[in-house]
Image 1 (cartoon, helix red, strand yellow):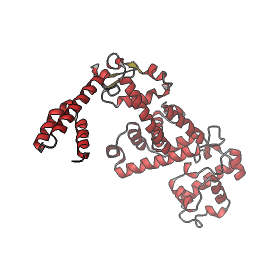
Image 2 (spheres, rainbow, N blue to C red):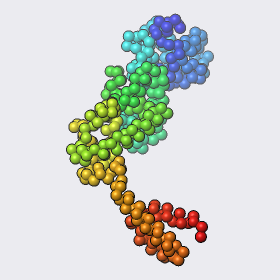
Image 3 (tube, one colour):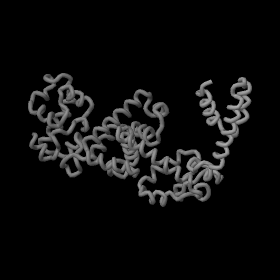
Length: 347
């Protein structure tokens, strides 16, 4: 039977958890320490294993399901075998598209609707469970089981995972990477769930942190542009100059969350909701007014001279009056440094 697996192109180490076996058969095989297709073939080699009297918990339906699977392997019936394992369309080997299709076959329409709301539309479990899944506990079980199975699929099909990772890192839509075996809703669920798994990974968190810093720096550059406060800045040429056109979608999503930024995706423009040009001159990215700093330094020197002259004779009330007099002209930091310096001097 192992030779038959090689002819069909199914790896002996392929995990049964990715197959479309019933939950009762999966539990039975797990108790028997049968986790891969190769171990299942060895388990089949003993004819008595399919005798319900020899295996605890094997009922008539479980035995019939395993007998059908064994017969499909021996007779090389691809259509029957494809009901249990994610075979490629040509019947040779396993494929990522078939694995994803079987993953959604185990879900009901209500489960897919819940996952679509949860991952694509970012609704909370508390809001979704009432109308679709019944209880929060059941909703959490459906979500965790789906994400766990999806994680196993991505771990086995490394090439497809790398393609999805590259697309996610570049900010391109993941929906395009799922084949025709899934409908539009299932593709949206799969793309959103894959993006969540990538975001929650250690490497994904590092990339997101770096990208947030990068986007903040780009936003500061936009704030320094006069057009940002009038006609708007074309985001395409702006990113093209940085060689980061592939990040236009995530960058626009980042800008859309900012209350003071208006994004016009159809026109490819971003502009400020604040129409005053003073933000260009006195915004956080512009240097401080040197003349104002010079005047504050001169006022601080005068305040320090006055304090040194009367320091020994002043009361607390006089100190309060001195602070009130100079606070608006020098700033509290300069006055504080003067008081610290006077306190360190020996009396």
